[in-house]
Length: 538
Image 1 (tube, one colour):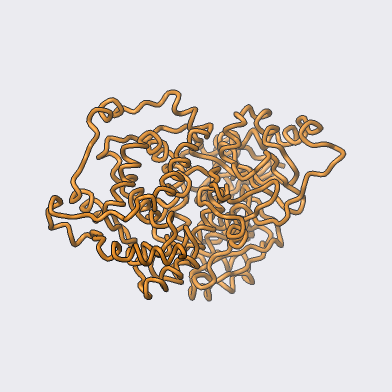
Image 2: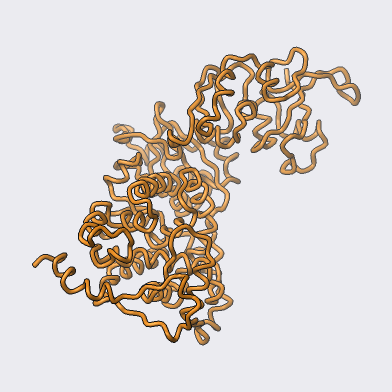
């Protein structure tokens, strides 16, 4: 007798006897509700073991250990003696109040997972809450791009406990637990040096695309979640064996053992991450750098070279660049790779770049051998937007253009323009082809921009154009002060600008020069739309 025929004979009777609760049952008294347990709760046991492994693996992260040395839980002593407990009606009420398009059903199985998170693994939940402040905003922004519900970000909690280095017993890797073939299918670079399944941003793009594809198959997010765990083939088998039913709880006993607990665990994680305070759980204040910047490197560099020259802990650098398997960033003249560093170290990296690449290079790289080249290159944070939702435009950079103006002409954010085209520090060159994405059907009016003159493009965007102006700034004359009669340039601050970035556009001009000329005492206080005077050198 096959496993599935056994499930059909011994499990179907229990399946029909199992009573699962929804928001409609809120009016009933919890004491009158009867919960039927599965025939063998070991169906969820495999997933609980994996969740435990993932939660334990959090303690291997350097920044977690650094934070826990000094972090304290104000509620910990009280929680040990006064562990909160709630009636079933309270759990159902709270789940019903969470904004979600995914059906957050409540039952005994869900409650068991809630207990795992809110009782047995409280300290690890504190860590995940701290990590969520770092990862979830990026996850939500990416999900918004693909039309995936925001609440599915909690799937990463049960997949990896928000650990980008998590590795399952079957070889799934990263925050979203991609197997090799699935990761390659969705464009992730996986080779001996780089594994983008560990890159939280690149992997989230792949996960969002995978989830959107699964939803197109089932038109049901709960079934899409089940298929994410066990594959659409196993979900399709379960649907057929159930007689064509397309509800997760109707096909529950026909699914693989771990998958049966997958959706309940997701619901429990969603509940816990929303109602942790009611269970006297606090966020752990993690020391992971909240603000990082990305530097593109076009020659091989070892993370230890960066760490030792800039005096950054190598463990911290590894934790914010988990995609590099052996600490080697395999940049080449043809393909650049991104390396994240704390934002306050960016200026030092730029100033000391030559020293970094030369530092102990004979130690980290054998001069008699070449650094292994990637098998296949996919930019770590560049992604083609869905063709059914966006039109793709092309623009050739002209003399005098800058990122701010191009973004203004096309009515897009400068940060998006940089992201779409791997633009580093706003540096673009004449003749460079840039990609611009506009929502489907709204791109026609922007297509002529590539053929317009600078004045025509400014007029198109509703900007005033000074006589004779051919660049991103208009030339005028200062009428008073010590520099009387000296020409200066008027620059309008764009979104994402800083004095350092602006100064870089004008050779010989420093941040200090701009600050003095404009009486700026705090360089961080400049605002979009503000006009700055810039006096060119030489």
